[in-house]
Amino acid sequence: MKKLLKFAKAFALLLFLVLLGSILYVRFSRYTDTLIYHVNGLAYEHFESNIPHKEYYFEVDTNTTLHGVLFKPKDEPIGTIIHHAGKGMHLMSSQPYYKLLTDRGFQVFGYERRDFGKSTGIADNSLILKEDVLFMFDTILKDDAVQGTPIVIWGQSLGGAFAMMNAAERNDKIAGVIVEGTFNSFPDIGKEYARAINMGNFKWMMPILMNNDFPAEKEIQKINKPILVIHSNTDEQVPFKLGKRLYKASDTLQSTFWEIQGKHIAALFDYKEEYLKHFEKMID
Image (cartoon, rainbow, N blue to C red):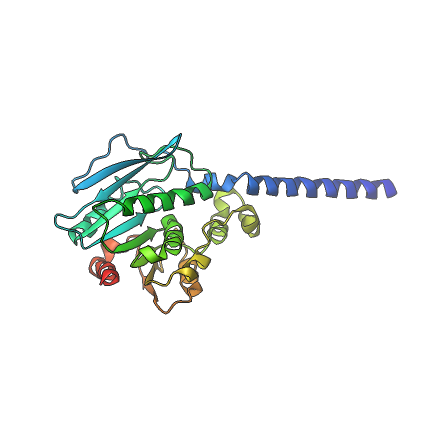
């Protein structure tokens, strides 16, 4: 009996060490970063657009070139929108959004993250992606076409996390920030998608497994410019409660929550006039 008990204790210790080792590997190898940012099957061969534009290729390191485009209105722009797109939104698929904004007089700068669209490199580390965001922002602000224009940061879905970080880090450079269909933290959205990676019964582990290098709940508290958080109460991709949680984390009186109905990040089409007026209000 003593031998059996001793064996059981040794086996339990072994299981614990294997579990601990697995958790540490997933966390410190940034395995979840690859799951979050890597996109398959959405590439395109040639960039083209009917919207007036200027195309850029930024060399950020030896093996990485980031593709960006500044979409322009017909006349002088009334402001510049820096767009952080959702997962799977490249510069071809995003143009229906940009058309509505450029028709209103805005110019829009969009880019594609590493290993997506026409950008090269490997998207497996959110800290490097954070550096990319700030590099792209700082670089495009030096462009003659952008200098002197009011800047609004706009993030949709996954891009909302990037937008909040960008706005917090460059608060003095912007007029305001708008996010739509986004979430408050990666661990919390990870819980919602745990089932997709066969961890539905272990979603409580997601905060342990996932890095939270874009803690939007904390970033929003650093921004003292107008903030608009938009979320559909029928959003099937990012739960409404996570958008509401992000808004409630804000400690500024300049924050606004706009509850809508409709599909994920479709508000610019469903509520066109009201949405565009929110952009215009930020640059007044």
